[in-house]
Amino acid sequence: MARRPLPRILSNGGAQLARSRELARTAADGATDVLHPLITITRGLRRLASAGRRRWADTPKDRRGALLFLVASVLLVVALAPYGPLLAVITLMAAAAWQGRDRAPSAPAGPDASQAQRLKSLYEALVPYFSAAEDPEPLYTHGGDWGKVFSEYAFDSTGRIAHLVIGYPAYFTDGEPESRARIEHLLGAKSGRGREYHFAWDEEANQLTVRVLAPLPTDIAAQPFVTAPGETVLGFTDPTGVQRTLPLTHGSHGEERRDVPPVVWRTGIRSTEPHLLVAGQPGSGTSTLLRSIALQALHHGDVVIVDGGGTGEYACLTGRDGVLAVECGLTGALTSLEWAAHETERRLIAANRAHQAGDPPPEDTRRPLWLLLDRPSAFTHLAAADGREDPQSLLQVPLRHGRPANVTVVVAEQLDGLEGLSDPVRQHTRARVVLGPATVEELRAVLGAPPHTTPVDQVPPGRGYARLGSGPVHRLQVPATPDPYDDATSEAERQAVLDLLPPRTTPADEEPERLEAGVAEAVRLDKAAMEKEAGAGTEGVTEAPAGAVDAEAAVAEPTT
Image (tube, rainbow, N blue to C red):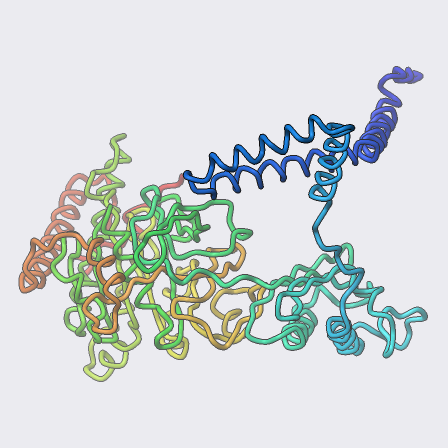
């Protein structure tokens, strides 16, 4: 069956539309050229009127009468003189044309001598990487023309490269991370150290775009963030990295307001990255990030803190509402984590019963529980020396089954102590943060992918990189959340943290007793639940030693 031809208006409508746009663009350009003198004179008249208003405003009130008399006299003389009005109009138009001229300095046709020398040296440095002996028409040759490969370039006020678009031959292995790393390291060294560069590889067009990143703000202190339940602000990043901003106050006294793009970590039963691992050098801000997370978590949940460093960084949280325990010793850490494991199992059983009965989960199972551990590997050595259980082994149940039970685990460890972390911690912490100076190899080992920027050696505290699951790597600046009891903390930052702390209604010496009572109550409830289920014969739960419940056999993780 023969196809019917399209109507003429549909077959060549695109060509007519393009022709109409071209004609409209040509007419607009012609009108601009014709009306350019009128536009210039109008702009000059507006500037002259603005100058007259400013002169009148600056004149004292006692002299304005004399000024008006002088102006009126001049107008009278001009009106009575032969050809006076005509000469006045011609003079006014000439003055308006002079004032309305384009005063913008003409852009230079190309780089100056120093900038051209910098581009030439960069071109020569790239010759060994972007050239091959078999290429009959190489783009890169010693003494060649750098203008053929540098299509766009820009310099900052100091004369260093701020933006550069580099073309490279198609046979360059831009798909190999090692080849990319060599080029990025070279460009970072030749363009100026001490700055962060963003590299965007366009493999289809064989182009590399280099852009200097502005420093992230470091004057943002701890404050209430506008987030939904289940969202935690880890820090702030570049505007091009995320599609969301938060209204924040910043400055020494919080007098300035602006919107800043955040790195938001989502937790809960629908989270794909329910647990977090933070790594960094000493003094890089890992404890600051844990304090910031704790202050945000206390708005909607409960927190258990285990401080392996034993430096008292979290003493300000002891006894606060919602803080179940702050442990700095091995015995307290074992007790708290054992209770957290039983609490996770209890929540799973209660939620499973509610699901089987067709009821919503109980309220106590929906309240988030946060386990914050700072340097847990320190307890591993103490436990091995005393012949006791490693506290990290008690994290297996919260890590594996914490998501449906609304239990979140956050582990902070130094880079040189990551080998002391257990396998469950490494496997189930899919949200990762690295703070402080780190090499590309260390970043790749922790984050699972290298960043698209060049790490620098000197960074402020709280500066690093974040990656949530398999997403992109973001630059990160943690909000300043120092220890308010530290003498080195400024008064503004100390007050910002104290304002976010919940009230202290539970004495600190009652915390261990309350936690031990909670452990005993959880074990008793688990035993009662097992006996009831065994008597009914409906659940099919096998008996576990010491009253513990096997979460894998007892509860099938709900699917969403």
